[in-house]
Every structure is written in structure tokens, then in C-alpha cells.
Length: 152
Image (cartoon, rainbow, N blue to C red; front, top):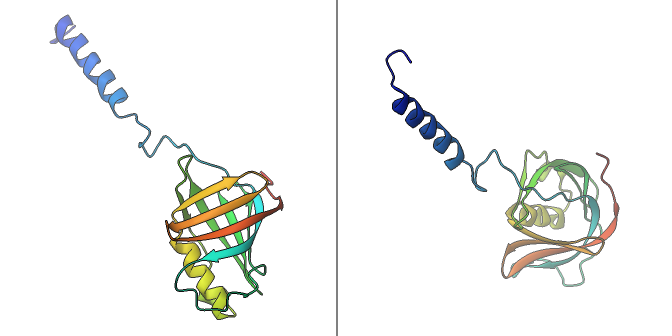
């Protein structure tokens, strides 16, 4: 082995194998354990202490659907917008690459809801029943199942 003895060759090989396998973990960004949301959900409850509207505010004008893998559509009172989401098996969620902005909001209620949605970091989904988007332990959004929407 020109210039490298056999012992060094196996040592280098072992080092490379160790480096490759030691880099693999569940926190590795190349290894994903995603959760696929695939339904359409109607907003039924907002739990937030700064809720600026009457308690009988009709929240059913807002819905959230997941028509494609890791994509969502938000239907506000009069307009809609969309984006992407990343949801992990451990309940973390992030809404990203969105065109949802204040331009989509025709009311204070729309704007308030959009603000809460963007602050959501956790979720709990019960297939065919409910979806809970959690901002923190005291603030969350509850949706009821409407129908299946996944197309791919």
C-alpha cells in the first residue's frame, strides 16, 4: 500500500466509518420524522387572554386545509392564502414560505387569527376529530375536522 501501512489503512477506514455513523441522529436535518396533516379543519375555539372580540364571535368563517404534502391553505373570512408547513412526529409545527399577510385580512378578526397562527409552535391532531395548534400552555386554537383534502 504505497506509503501507508496496513494498520494505518484500517485505522483511517475505521475513523471514516465512525465519522459517518456518529453524525446520524434524530436531530440531523437530513433525517426527518415528519407528521403529515391531510384534512380540512374549521376553527371552533380561540383560547387567548388578549382576545379583543366578544366571546360569541363567529369563528367558523376561518378554516385551514392541507391539500398537498407539507402545504396548507388558510381560508379567512373573505380571502384565502397558502404556504408550507413542517410538522414533526413529536408535535412541533412551523408555518413557512407563506403569502399570508395583512393584505389577506379584511377584518380585525382575520388579522388577529393570522397573528395567532404564526405564533403556533406545537400541535395535537386526532385523526377525523380535532386539531389543536398550541402557542403556549395557556394559548391555543382548536379546529374540528371537516373533510379529507390530501391530493398527493
